[in-house]
Amino acid sequence: MKIVKQVIIHLLYHLNLYKTIQWIRNLRNGHTVTILVYHSFTDKKNSHTSLHVDTFVKQLVYLKENFQVRRLGDVIKKIKNKEALEKNTLCITIDDGYLDNYKFAYPALKKMSLDATIFIASGYVGRNTRDLIDDEHTADNEPDPHTAYSNQDIYRLPPLKKQMMTWEQIKEISNDIIEIGSHTVNHPILSKVPIDEARAEIIQSKQEIEDALNKPVDLFAYPNGLRSDYNAAICDLVEDAGYDAAVTVDWALNNAAPDLYRLRRIPISEMRLPQFAAKINRIVSDP
Image (tube, rainbow, N blue to C red):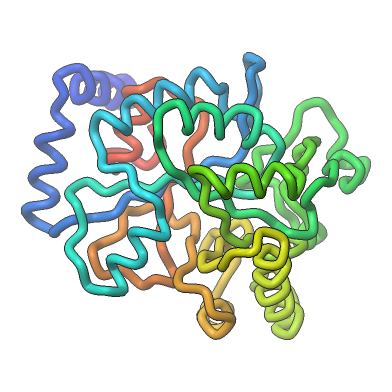
């Protein structure tokens, strides 16, 4: 079955049948919004935790040719104002705020003239996560950031040994093509901490980023973002704090009138273009 699936994936890509699939989907369901989520980037080969920048560039070329890539904040404003969305609208988001976002992702996006949203954990800005993780996570074989959490990990970033962006770098990119959103202060799994602590994380991060950048922060990303990592009470806290929308890592597309505090995203990792196309077009969840 795996071989059959791969043959189908390659045929769909090389015969350029995704435009037909998108047309049928738009006809049946109306216009949808696809939101991708990235985390870390590298220029080194064979990384288990970071996307190679050359792969990212190839993905950006595909996206520019096949989707209307728009800034998430602009799409949210259209949805709130009940304005019609463009066909095949897609948003690029990046979580956590690693330095490699500035070194690799930002230049690639700028060269392609594509906007993106980066969600930062304000308490980690300018720090080195190598100094913040304990011995159980110091092995060379670093864990997958989507599955690395245990009950002891709820107060920290995924244990990738990386430097974070500084406020100066964040200011630079936020004055260009990058929109900055909040990812809490300390990146706790919000459903696993006391509600007052979750409230403080959500409010304080917004204030800290707005003070540092001197511009409003209207978007929020739930740390880790799986369905067990947030709940209705947490969504209410985000809305009450004044955010316009919040994103999860529920793997699905969003319709033209989504729940703005449970927006779904598709996680992207290292993969070839046929698999990438199949994943973002929701032909398969795990190509």
